[in-house]
Image 1: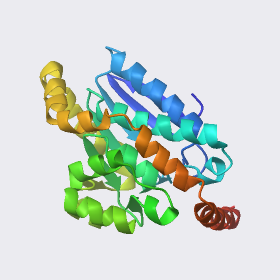
Image 2: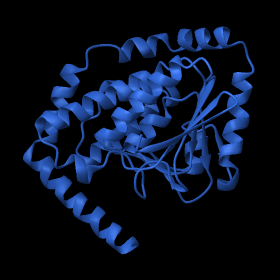
Image 3: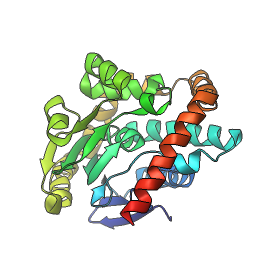
Image 4: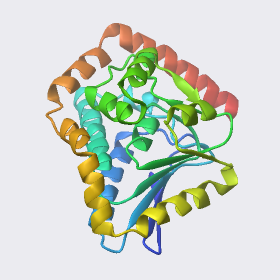
Length: 258
């Protein structure tokens, strides 16, 4: 695995995203995470999972600079596998806590809302789903997971305006469950997940799957139509032009930060 680090200690797996400064998600990361989630779910020595990132960034979302260069086949594979990863994480039967170490927009946010509990580092960070302003059509599967936590009213409004929330705002609306000082983030997440891990695993897991049954069923429907719509808009000239401008800004910020 080259896009994250994995440690396992006393039944607890910690996946630390590790791809560049901002942990931007490319197809390789998605595929590696799919393999990892499958393995951890089947590993009887693993009783829980913490997903985290680097100080300052959990993940900036999909790597638009790389994804822009994908051809049509590669683009379809990326989004197909990303939606598969989302389904797998939502249906992960063991406890999963997201330790959100910094900025967490778009695809990064999608990964965290698949978890059972979210602890976010205190600081000048943002979290939320801003796909629509970027030019990406939001599939219903993303709305279903977002609204599972926020309710349909807020999820709808936030998605339609691409709202990004500050840390306290995210706590206030239930997008995150707890705020922690950055230096205590992992210990706070571990303390929470071990309270889950102390409970009877069969009772806990089956209850989780029961409570998420409607959500899992929604995410298990054929995503082809939604993908076709997303990809048609992804390749539309106006979207490509907007992405070019966004990518130029990203490259300028990256050069300034170096």
